[in-house]
Length: 533
Ligand code: ATP
Ligand code: MG
Image (spheres, rainbow, N blue to C red):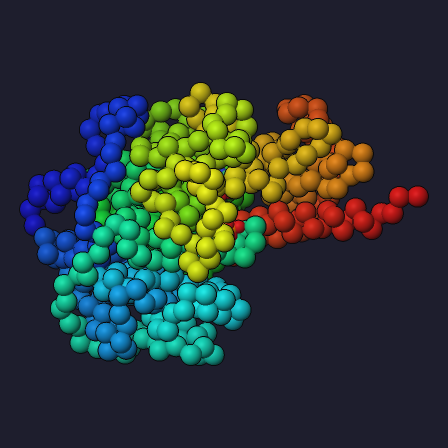
């Protein structure tokens, strides 16, 4: 395919092009409303037809890098589809995908979508119970996996397809699906409770593009190559990176890295000539802790947890680009983002609403407020889930009138959204409502602090007191009162941590998020262990 045609095609698919301002983009944006849409067509089949030899995936898992074309990706997905059909899989049936980054992982999703079936990404680090609960809940009876995954899935009653058992491909047209027809169930991280399965329709990808493009200062610029250390089993890996890259014709790097490793990360970036990365905050924290420097990047996006102003400053220095922090959740993702190409970042805030998203900060009655409130997203957003799979009660609880309530607290600051904390994490102390994010952010600016989790500890007098659990950097010697002074001098007098404990590590989810509910339970135990005299 001639270069100009390919560039024209990418341009056609990009939302953020030309020189429009943020306000112009926001005000002129309309969600595409196609009557029919199929994800397999969008991310694979359309390219396979127009430019079969174009690189879809750069596979770095073997000894030497290997470019996988759209034609080859389609071939692979048609092999998977032939097997799914042989197993009697029909439209609407769930298909487990237990694979880490790689062509077969993408192909398995694509095969399911082409048939109108519903893919269910599963994480390779899950153990028996985590797999069981998701398989039972989703009702998947077939799964695509590798040899290692086949052993993990052996205890369950599933038909399994592995790489070495691929049949001959067939050639079937894509199912006639509409934007609201189910395509994928993605389970939430389980940071606050049991993971919930967010059921998404075929419009999910289009819903991600504005936020994805913003968080990369536009995407599809000459030479762009996209990678994330996050697994493709999560919304961040699958729909913030892999699928947008495939759709926009930006090569996606697939690499094997079971757990984040700084040296390995730097090697992947060099070997894959990676230009655009989505780093989860924990990956950035590890890079920072090891004093890593990265060259040659054009854009870095991060989100999923508070990042902190300190990290932004470090990123400009060590990564050579501003980090664009974005915000969203499995149920409705990439709703707000920073975008260095469009407006100056505001430390402590998570950017501005992505075009197409109406974000409200609302009170209990569902009315918008100028103060702190619940961050909510108006119905009609492209990436909003259809419902929680198999869970009408939770679905019902998630909405307040026409708003999807995120469960996060925030407030507006000059058009920027400030993240205050998860609703459950907000601390009530002596009549003040205190968000942990700002205090954690402040403590992280202290040179001796590696990681920190701030929670409310029950207190007879003040309802709760601010309690910080701190992990120090190796070799650092810092006293609790030095850290208290650090916060008192920088934030409000009432929000400094009245108690500080030092830990070797914080409780984390498999996706690397601090589990504050476990810290809260620890604080409650500490409280009840001390009986008033
Ligand atoms: P569960 O819903 O199962 O408790 P979870 O909320 O962690 O888990 P995800 O959907 O993976 O599951 O994460 C979304 C949440 O992550 C958001 O609701 C918010 O609390 C947090 N988050 C995402 N981006 C940011 C950000 N930039 N800053 C602060 N928090 C963020
Ligand atoms: Mg959540």
